[in-house]
Amino acid sequence: MVLGAVDVGGQSGLSDIVQFFNTQSATGDVSGALDSSALAFKISMFVIMFVGGLAMAIWIGRIAVDIAALATRGFGGSAGAVDKIAKFGTGKSDSYESVGAYLKGNLLEIILMIVLIAFLMTGWLFRLIAIALDGFGTLGNKLLGLDIAGGLASLDAEAFTEQVQARRTASLRGEYDDQLSSARKYSSSLYDQAKDGAVSDDPQFNKTKSLYTQAMVKSEILATELNKRGAASELKLGSSYFKQHLRQNGDGVCNANFLVSDVMSTYSKKITCKK
Image (tube, rainbow, N blue to C red; front, side, top):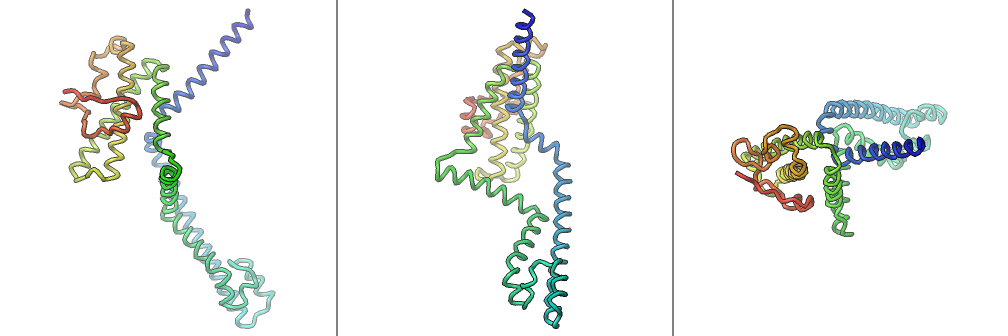
C-alpha cells in the first residue's frame, strides 16, 4: 500500500512538473525577455565591436607583414628570412615571389576578411542573418507551400488556449493584467504612429497591429476562462473587471481599426469592442 501511494504521488509530481514546463513554453514572453535583457545585448554588441576593431588591427598588421616580406624578397632577401617574416603574414612563403603572385593568392581572402570584420563591427552580419531567415520563410512559402510563420503562430495559439484551462485562477488573473497592459502599450504606439502619418503598408505599423491583436485575443481567451470560473467574485473584483479589454470609451483599449483578422482567425477569437 505504501509503494502504491508513493507511485501515485510520484506520477502526480511528474505530471505537475510536465504541466509547469508546458505552461511556461506556452506563455513565454519573448518580447518582454528581450526588453529586460536590452542592457546585456548592448554590452554584447559593444564586446563584438571591440573584438571586431581588434581583429581589424591584427589583420592590417598581418598585411603590413606581407608588404615587408614582399619588400625583403624584392631587395634580394634570402628565402629563410622571408619564411621567418611570412609566419606572421596572411600568405604562404611561395606567395611572396612577386606582387602578382601575392595578389593572386591572397587578395580575395583579404577582401572577404575585411568585409566580415566590418559586418561584425557595424552589426550588419546580424541583419544579414535576419534577412536570410526571413527569406527562408518566404521561399518556403512560395516554392514548397510552407507557411512557417503561420504554422508557428498556430502552434502558439493552440498551446496557449490549451494551457489556460489547466492554470490556476490567480495565475490567469496576473496574465490577464499583463496582456491588458501590453494591449494598452501597443494601442498607444499605434495612435502615435497614425498621428505621424503611418499608412496601411507601413511594415512597423502592421507589426504593431499584429502584436496589439495578439494581446487582445489572449486577453479575451483569459477573460472567457476567468468569467467561466466566476473569478471576479472569487477574487473580490468588479463584475466588469475582465471586460476591460473590450471597452472603447474613457481609458478603453479596444479599437476595431487596429485589429488584424488573420491573427484573430489563428486564435479562433473575434473581438467586438463595446462602448
